[in-house]
Length: 333
Image (cartoon, rainbow, N blue to C red; front, top):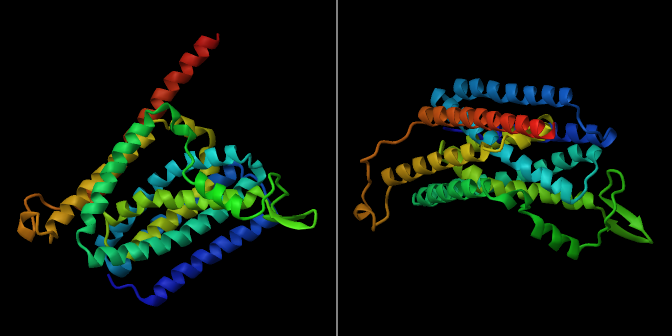
């Protein structure tokens, strides 16, 4: 897949323009998006992401189109798990509801920039060291097991992956515990101090980057093309803010979604290990020769597994929580 430099520049320029336009709107009218507003915006981003599949297929071929759509679905489904942590961060920092949309927007912009660097470095690493697929595959399988354990762990909802970063920042720069509308810095007693809004924004950005440690290798398990990995990430992140407000209380009902995500990560981890065996150059494995006993897992099969897994775990979660809700109502009566 040959992606010209101007394509990269144009793609990044469009993303920056979208984020800037959205940011200006938020500055002029900070508010909590309604269910209808969020639903319309999520629909627009999903439609754009799906239409981009035809663009990829028309320019580079159907194989790359399949890799893109599989990568986007994977990235979008994994990003849903971020929303649980966003809820925790907003609760811990007591963020006013009308400021949450702006915080998410800036945090996602930071995450997108950091992910771009991560994707480029990952591509260079994979191209130079074929054994990286072993590392990525093993890491995804380990993450899958860890995710299942956390799903059934009572204290899982208390996690905040970026807490250490925000504490360090608050020690390095002067801060105030009070919010001052949508301002990041205010002058108090003749000194400039930063509001909690800055800390929340940084917390959102770096938390998402930590999630990228498993989601980006997962997409690299579906495609070797950095451009596809980047646009899949971009479309997933652009709709994440609206998805947060759209799902709202529904997140509590998706209690087994993490099980589905762990299955997806384990599947892609297995796909990466099999691919690594086909490309094997490690001397202590089969004498440094390729191992092709197990056939490669196709992108189309992976896409089917991802969609079926998401559908089953979502239906399972909604059915179980519906029964729990009925039991709670009966107990109340």
